[in-house]
Image 1 (tube, rainbow, N blue to C red):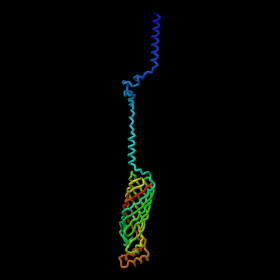
Image 2 (tube, one colour):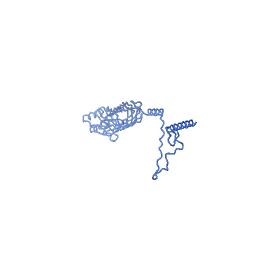
Image 3 (cartoon, rainbow, N blue to C red):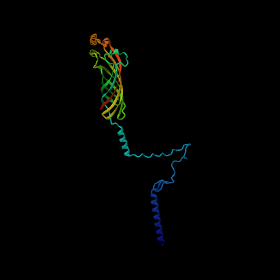
Image 4 (cartoon, rainbow, N blue to C red):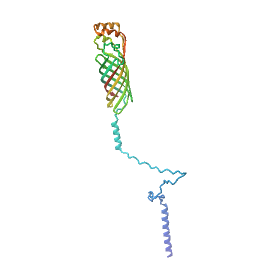
Length: 285
């Protein structure tokens, strides 16, 4: 009987010892957390304004901002809108254009003495058509090239050819620009009541031009636009020889021009101007 009770006590003691050992080996949850590892509802806030040192409180904890949602549809929409706004012109290296329109020319805009230049044998002002062409290179906003024009008028034609520099401001398909030009100008194909005078008179000089306009790119290589220009003409008429003057006298007998023939012996000069409005078609490479 005594031996049986002793055996029972030893068995109970061994079971209790094994349970204690297993409980000691199991990892314990951190203080202030539940056994499942979640934060305890009564866990104290790590930020405590009362914790001050020298009157300074620790800053509050920073909360990271929520990430912005990224939508592939929204990105594609922005790309499509940017593509529509972009002209797709690309880099332009060379250009070529032609123009045509209206021109008004006054050979003596800044001189009131008409006899000094033409002696009344040809008209000193005219209105008519003008055609021209230009070619050059472009580097981003700047262009450099050459341009030639021919103006067609009743008594004569005005020829000009020279260099040109310009500044362009690309705005999508629009290309406003301003240009400066300088070169040679001369009159030709004179028509006069006196054929001898028309053949003998020569007027030539230089021009300085400022112009501005707007081009619309219908495609990366083709544009249409309009241009307005104003130029100053510095012109000179060489004096005629005595033989040429005598020939004119013989052909102007009993006419008012005979008395003016002697005026052609001296050299004449004048400063005029020309205003032109043209339509422009261009190719861009």
